[in-house]
Length: 223
Figure 1 (tube, one colour):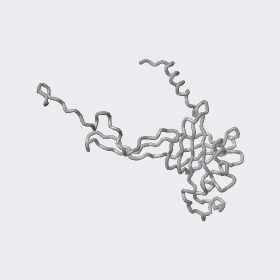
Figure 2 (cartoon, rainbow, N blue to C red):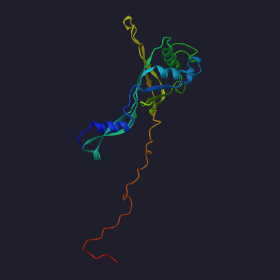
Figure 3 (cartoon, rainbow, N blue to C red):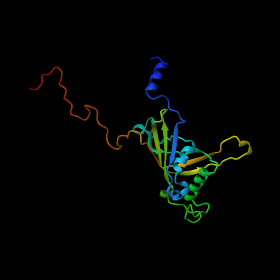
Figure 4 (tube, rainbow, N blue to C red):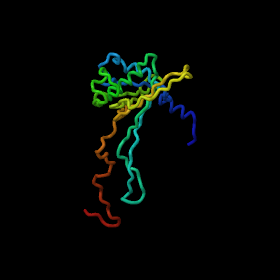
């Protein structure tokens, strides 16, 4: 079959065109450690507007080597899913609100800089994860503003807030804050659930069912 550009256009029109990577937003649910502070009451909406770049994470399958029948050719056998920490980039606002939010979030995890308002623990103590971990939702939109993909990072927290270079030559540039999030798992609210793992798939017709016995050719059948 030869390639036809019109067939491609037809298929794309059926699929609502081509997805644009610039059509997205990120919604961060404030963690419990910061939810009590009035300054971060509407942080989900504000950070959603100021997130300049993100990623739709996909897991990597961890595999081990197996050999067919114990010997012979080698094959990969998956046994786990690994989620790589994701780095998002946020626009630094003129009041340092975004930078302060992530700085306070990290200090609520590990009190490396004593601040009793952020973390009631003594210096250099680690908080409980259920108080500082939260969910992050990444939404991708179609050209007509419909949500076509959504991924939720569960038990996420800022593993690293990157260094921000400052220099005189950057007067015409935008200050960007890179934040790397670690997370436990991902959820796909808009994706069809998979078949339950651990249950045998339905058998094809004829398999596992009684089969008619063949009749010997050239011999009389039993009446």
